[in-house]
Length: 235
View 1 (cartoon, rainbow, N blue to C red):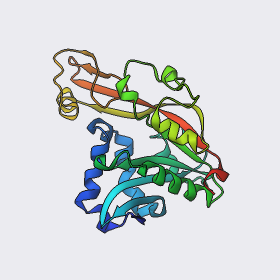
View 2: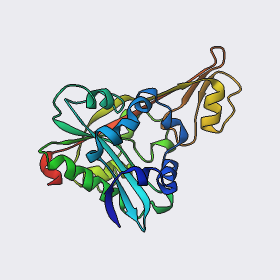
View 3: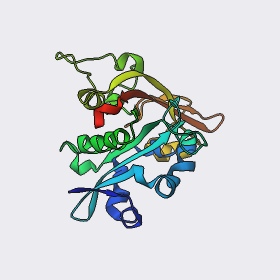
View 4: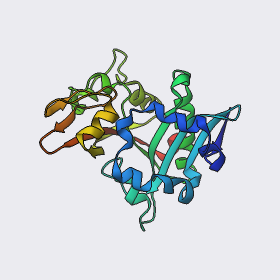
């Protein structure tokens, strides 16, 4: 098992494409991230990496240097490809093969990303997608992030993984991901029928999906959670 750059061979492999299964389909339809995503591998290759085992990609990590603190996950893209001198690294994604989840691979990927930031004297800022929030879609994210276990650590496993290695929860990354489309597109993405206008709980979504049949429009606005790792944390 080794960390490797995401080169053309890895990107073209079936195992790499299968990593998308780690997230629900709806998150892959934000127009801002889709506009910039392919540029990450060509223009910011040193910040994209994969965990490879027996020539098979079992995890991917994506990040981008930014100038200043982005307002949300999607705002990191125009900042990262802008003219400003970067002063921190922003995490974009860590995807683990669903068949390999629960093996501690996310910690390996997170540590490598922290190291990329620390090597440059930067903090790592992460708009974290809480891993269990989809089970509580009606609970406001502001309340969800306040939940803690009896041992005092954060309730959410992915937030807790960041907390365990020294990150601080600093706020909510509002409107981090925005997916828009027709009702038919949302029915395809969500695997549900939406017979009337209203809000719908969708498997994998952190908050309800809004459907307006009169306008033939669907809207999903996902909040994330800002966790900040100091420069020394990944040294």
